[in-house]
Image 1 (cartoon, rainbow, N blue to C red):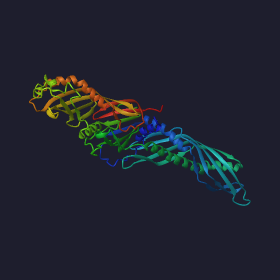
Image 2 (cartoon, rainbow, N blue to C red; image 1 turned 180 degrees about the vertical axis):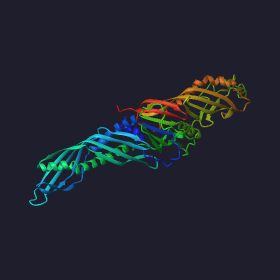
Image 3 (cartoon, helix red, strand yellow; image 1 turned 90 degrees about the vertical axis):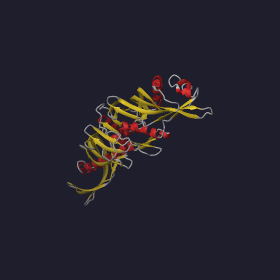
Image 4 (cartoon, helix red, strand yellow; image 1 turned 120 degrees about the vertical axis):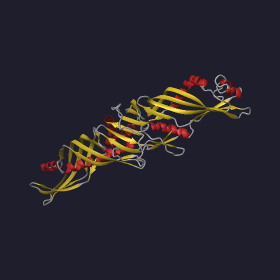
Length: 490
């Protein structure tokens, strides 16, 4: 897995701390991504190489002209040219949330090297002059940073510095040539003016490099995307809705609105109010709290576009789709249409309902119409009868790595159906016999549903290329909580 994928997965949640909201901030979030301190630590470890690569270029400070008084020599004019700060390296960085919407942290034990070429000239006669250089090693660098986050019209975050401070405990000074007064002069400067210049420059460099590294990780973060295809295609809006931070975690609310790609109509199903964090799995890097409205909205799109309308000709089930097969359970059918080929159309009568509960897990219901027709002598299909099939099911949920993307996988665990007759062209339909018949084919129906779900659903908020480990899933009332760690690069 690419390092940027880890950063995108962790930092995307970690840095959105300003409370900046998406343009439609009245909507309730259907997804909440909560990053723990462990997740922040992992994100920082991935960001550090990006920061250090920027700092490796070094810093050049502008020249300075000074007039100083030197005992026995008088006033000396000194020009410090191209003060170069190099060997900047961040060994470690601490990031932690600060309530209610803040991010604090810092860098300790940083070291730098400073090289200062300089010229000097005695202000008065006899105008003695010379040129030398000084090197100084700064040790014990402590840096504190604060960052602000803003969001564009699509709710995409970017990071900018608010403030920075830097302090080095001391500089070890070495003068290359010149008298003792030069050493004493620069010893003073590296405890005063030059020290302050270097500290300001290093602080600002890190105040720029850290947000730049985070923005680089966020650059590929898509706020609007689509999943599936054809009439099943769904548009997703990930616009940020708000942020909560405590002493232990950062939690962002994500709109995760679903719209029908064909019509751009938004799903009308509202999510439940999501908690900031579910009590289970507090030590995972990231916890995704996903409202069951998201899955319901996917089903809503299927329904409004008639994406799950299935047509089965007689050749699909040669034995079952013949009126003679129904002699023992619906005798009126073969009596009205002797030995006739049949066809069956399966359509949803309404959006499937899928809910999560702490007691039962994922449960759902679907109301399906089974429309039967018979083939007349000329081959035309004539409607014979319609059965209403009410399905109730339970499903187990797991997380799988599909192309290094966290993917929700569903598998039917329980399935029950109830049949009633909606209409008939040949008289009354007694469904008592049908119940027994369909009970025998329930395993086949279950296998068909599992096959439909086999591709899974990409976990919203988990970027492509970020593999996961140690998944843990618990169910709440109207949402599922998915705790994940992101895999380190192999």
